[in-house]
Image (tube, rainbow, N blue to C red; front, side, top):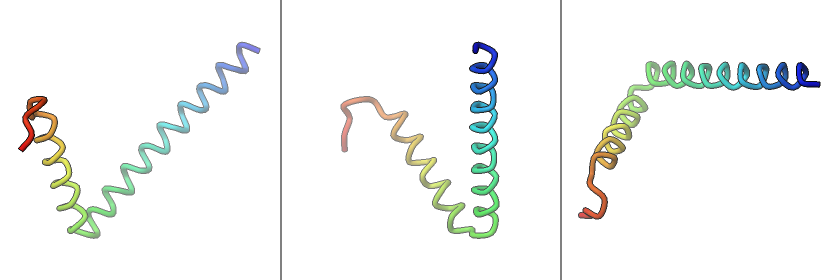
Length: 60
């Protein structure tokens, strides 16, 4: 029973990692084919970094 559970968990983790890598690869391919998507992703990353570095309670 324990071996079965460990095997199931390992397959589940492997599948999750594989799907994550495929999603990142698909996003990179789409960004190369459609440059406005690259601009949108870079802008979103910039905004996210600005929001993370802002001090709490300092709203504009």
